[in-house]
Image (cartoon, rainbow, N blue to C red; front, side, top):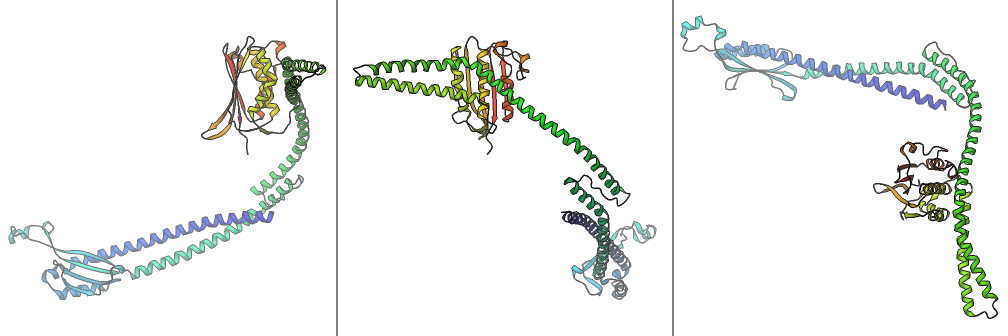
Length: 498
């Protein structure tokens, strides 16, 4: 492991510095080459312009006199200048009067032109006026053109020489930079490898491992700080281990207390549901008893007929149906009262409400409360604890009953929470037309043991426990209420994660 890290760090440092140095060297080299080439080209152009201007100035008389011999002599002198390969004098009709040298290809030469001018004496001045008018004030007339061609071969040779020297210098600088980089990398990375090895030792639990001191610079300070850190870690680890044990014990006690709190809330709800469940069971049990007695009377008749048999069969079917009803009520009550399972499962919230209704429906209706059910048939499945969610609904329905002592309406709704075309969660609304909750009590509604009911009617745990259950499911519960108009609780739960 340390070898792999060492290789990677050294390689990354070398590559980073090398790329930086190479890039810098090439940029400097390129700028140096282009600058020198520009300078040589400008000097060549300035020299050509100067030569052609001197030529045009000196050949004025030769053009005026059409003296080809003097012009040829002049051109022969110009052609001897460095890099000049062709020179010519042209008249005002662009006809060559005199020339020297061989004209070159336009791709390998610089060509310079300069007009040949002379001073013109206006006829209006006459010979007398010529003597008094300064020559500089006389008008000019173009009588020809001087042309000069300079070869670029020497320029190209100079450019190649500049490029070669610059490239060699750049390569030398790059090699020197690489050597320096490798040496510095080894000097810096070496102590770092010791620190890397030390971190592995410490990570494996060896808090007594010490880093060797290589120098008195910043790396030495880093090694010293590391050794101090391991000492502090060793001390802190002992304290942390002790504190962890204390926290684990406290957490265990908190979980047990939370479980007991949930069970206490559930038992309180069962106590309040007891009378309603008793009435719910009493009706079918009374019917079962009556039909059983009727059946016995029919069976004991000495003249038991076919019609009596049919009547007994009808009575027995009723007894079976009502017995199953009692069995369902008792099973729902037992399921609700037992401790909740810890694991999450796929839950259909419509079923949560439907299995809660036999426990609470009769009690609510006996208090003149009309239950209005509005369920979304396409409600998505959520991930949750069925028993705990059922406890939330029971708490909410008991709370609604206490809010409507003179009767009213209880609305139970389920909806699908959507974002665009996608299902994102489940919304459950429990709304009553009861007394409502004052504004000052809304903020304290979910606090443990807070209640606005009479002491005999509530523990103050129902809403608090319901809030915790919904929070554990990753959802939220909100409340809107207005005094004497009613209260609406809205539960939002996220959709099942696949």
